[in-house]
Image (cartoon, rainbow, N blue to C red; front, side):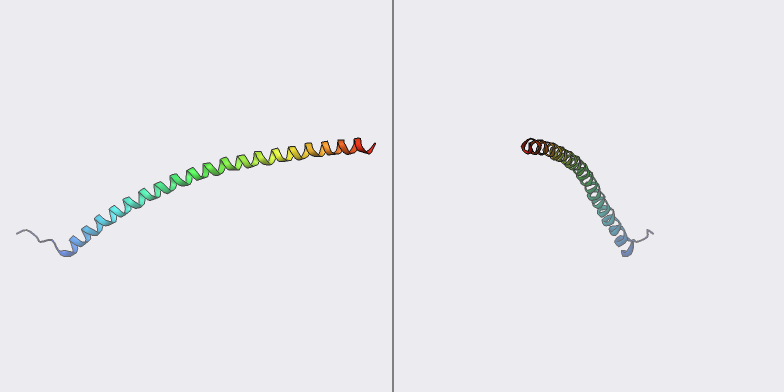
Length: 78
C-alpha cells in the first residue's frame, strides 16, 4: 500500500518552492544594487578628481591675480 502525502508536506513543499524563487529574485536584485553602487562609486571618484583639479586651477589663478595686482599697484605707486 502506498503512503498518502499529507497536506502539511504539500504545504511545506510549496512554501519551499516559493522561498527558493523569492531568494532568486532577491539575489538578482542585490546583484543589480551592487553593480549600481559600484558605478556610482566610479562616478563619485571621477567627480572628486575633477573638483580637486578645479580647486587647484582656482588657487593658481588667485595667486597669479595677486602677483598682477601687486605689480600694477607697485607701478601706480611710483
